[in-house]
Length: 247
Length: 258
Image (cartoon, rainbow over all chains, first blue to last red; front, top):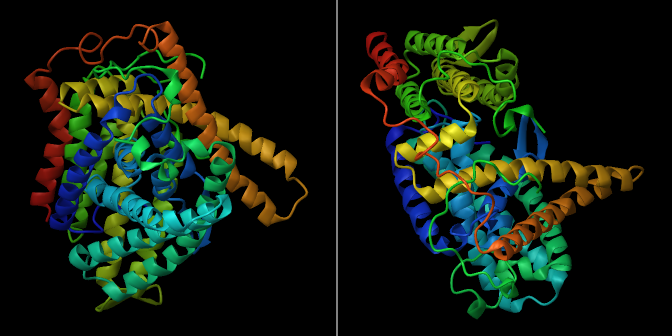
């Protein structure tokens, strides 16, 4: 669920928007190589993937539902920089075209759904990576890192509420409900991420950026086989109005 | 999959009075209006009601399909639960509502959030009903949104359609193969299909890039740069005045009816 308008006060939302804008700026610079790809670039695929993955909604009870945040999985697959850029697109689309999440809360949602889980998941996995042997261990630990990422997101939401939430409900009540819901979400996130990551590791391990050797990735890039031999076009291309008719 | 997540232009968009207004005017007007609604305190119910009326009036002018709006109202459900939770768990003073002791501030804040979200759904529907996505993206170019962001938006919208179709196919295959199995098996297969979906879509990106490389480095058919050729030029004061009118009214009522 995205934060709606009016849940967090304006100064806190503005602060989060500043953090989010800085984060997206840094991420866009780091992901520059991938963003310059023309045609169906990887970031567009990932952004669409995040939107579709969030459709996999599971009922939690009390009328609320949990969905995969997906940022943890994306951070493992394509790296945190591309993930943050994609979540920025997703959050803006959801707020302005689908009315899911508040307009003044775009910054908050970007921090909670993108920056925090992506950095926590990728950071923890990078720490654990040297100790991991075998596909199964990597998939399971990847899932656990994604769960930690969604718990960190819950902590961020609680911190935002403590700073700028309404005083109508006590922070302890909100923290308990958010924490409780996110234990469920984190369990789900761990399971789904581990299974999805395990599938990619089994079929196309070269696509998982978090497991690529460091010297192979000076900057985040689209996962195109190196022998494709295409130099990245230097300019920002125009948006094709008529999309290719066949996928 | 809910209809509210549909991307791309609706096939049967009617031409209404708002269709002719430039997209960037409508987008800026929408954001300004929603911010004005968001800053209205929940202690001013009449201001929120007036802003709701403005949103409905604009939606009527935009020839909104109200069945689509009703579909989008599903997004209100979690917020309705939140409003109930706030009313039950909020602090004193409490008020009696049909035999239940509810927190007055909790009720007010919860209902405020719910009403603001509903106003958001109606106003966003007005934009969607009167503006195609290519027009919207072209309009964003004229208000200084960076090229990489617009491009990502356009490609994501296209990819969203492709991936949804892909996911539907994968799911059907999973359903067929796991038809008589236990629930856990079905769920695990569904989760693995997310991995398969990622592989399929990145492989499609790869093959598209390869095809582009074979054609000589440039991708796709010759395209018009959005915002430079296709759309109208800079908008005059009357257009901006019309686009910002709902926001101005929203600010005015939030000051007057406080």
